[in-house]
Image (cartoon, rainbow, N blue to C red; front, side):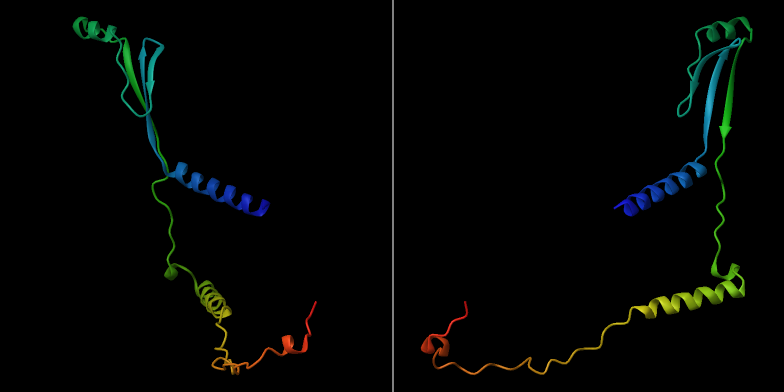
Length: 133
C-alpha cells in the first residue's frame, strides 16, 4: 500500500520536474516613475492613463520591462550507438535474459480429456442406503 503510494508520488513529482524545467515564460512589468503599476505573466500589461498624456507632451516617466525566464531548450537523449561497448553488451545480455525468463509452460497432455463415464443403470448408494453425512 505504502509502496504503491510512494511510487505514484515519486512518478508525479518527476513528471512535474521535467515539465517545469522545460517551460519558459515572460513576465512583463509596467512602471510609472519608480512605482510598479502592473505585472503580467500570460497577457500584456495595461498602460496607465498618464501615458496618453506623455505621448502628447513628449515626457518619458513610464517604462516597460520584460523579464524572460528561459527553460531548458535541449534535453540530452542518448541513442544505443552513443553508448560504449560494455554498456551495449550489458543491455543486450540483460534484455535477452529478461525476455527468456518468462518462458511459456509446455502444453499439458490430459489423457482423460475425451473420456466419458459409463451410464449408470441404478444408483448404488440409494439401493444400499449408504449416505455420507
